[in-house]
Image 1: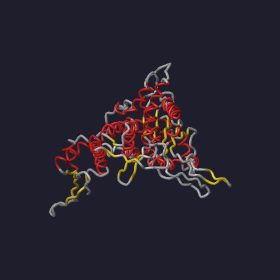
Image 2: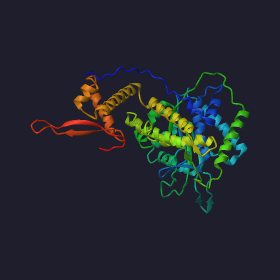
Image 3: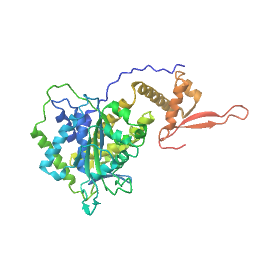
Image 4: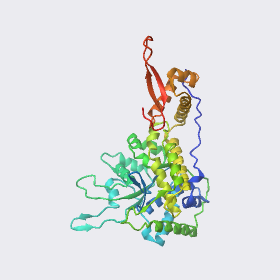
Amino acid sequence: MDDSIDIDVHRNPPQPDPACLYGLVGEIGRVGGEETETNPYAIAANFMTYLSCAIGRGVYLPIGNTWHHPRLFLLHIGRSGRGRKGDALSLVLRLDQALREIEPTLAPQIHRGGLSSREGLVALMHDGYQQGKNEVPPIEDKRLWVVESEFANVLHQGRREGNTLSAALRDCWDGVCLKPATKSNRLYASHPHVCLSGAISPSELTSLMNSRELTNGFANRFMMIWAERSRILPFPKATSQSVVDDLAQRVCQILQFVGADNHERRDRIRMELAPQAHWLYSHLYRAELSDDPGSELISAMLERRAPMLLRMGMIFALSDLQTQINVTHIEAAAAWIRYAMESVRYVFVSATDEAKMSHALHLAQRLLSYLQAHGKASRSEISSDCFKGKSSKSQIDSCLDYLLSTTPPKICVEWQQRPTDAPGSPTRFYRLLALGAST
């Protein structure tokens, strides 16, 4: 049987839902996109990352034994000359400058010089150290917004033997204290609050990010979005300073609300989900946040989409000057997660592979519906009755492998012995598993 699939290799780039542009985050994105070529979603994402840093570790959301802080890593992907990746930062940097003029203690430290090593990162927020006879005082404010306009630099550093920068960044996303990598280095950084805005072209990303970084938890700590210029405009206009100042005042209110300048008192403001938001997140978690996208690579890269959603929900709630996360905050965060999922698939999966994945997922859904009606089925019944003899052996194998390897598995394999007077090996059946059931 012919395994070929009628494939249309043309597809649209990721299209974000306007629900992403919620509240102050959305307003800043739209303002920055007015009368400029800059993509408003890229501006909003960079501002959200900046705000997540400025808020600091004073607020937390407990989920199980993990206390989440609003820390985000963003990776803006766009083709050179079309992504307007530098422009997507310009308004955020102007807001930061205006905030510093209002109340400098509320603004976080910004590092734009490029990262090269774990030690260099730790030095930006160290706990103090001895230099000869001199005592170097600690950096008390651990809020650090790293701007990597050439994120390829970070990936290049990760390829150097013995370089542990990518491991240090993984620890920063988790909020883990950074200890020295060698005995000769005595630099520590306790309770870091590092957020990162990176930018890269798709060709650099796919060529430089090796398989280890794609699957070891480094890549999936970044919210990756595909964003390019929204229009062609020879003479873009700058956002008026009065608008920038007004927006900076609102940012100031948020940071005063959370006491962002109170660096010593961590985890002092507990956030919670409203009952309806709790239900919605639970529904999303059991559905699209846990769905297997049909590719081991894509699945690994999206592994942290659930905590990312919660962190963004925190940011949206705090931007409304409240500590309760409501349904609207979860919906806005979910829109960003869907945008990121589409972006990852667009960059890392070819149109041909995506069509094959979609076909396999379609067959899997058909088989699930069939098993829901029949309970279990043999291989021959699946081929002849479920798929009407129109699917090849390899396609059915891919479908069964997918359903058996999901977490948790959706089906299980059973063997039924033949009657004693009937020769032959046991008959293999595939049975539907209830959600959360084990074999």
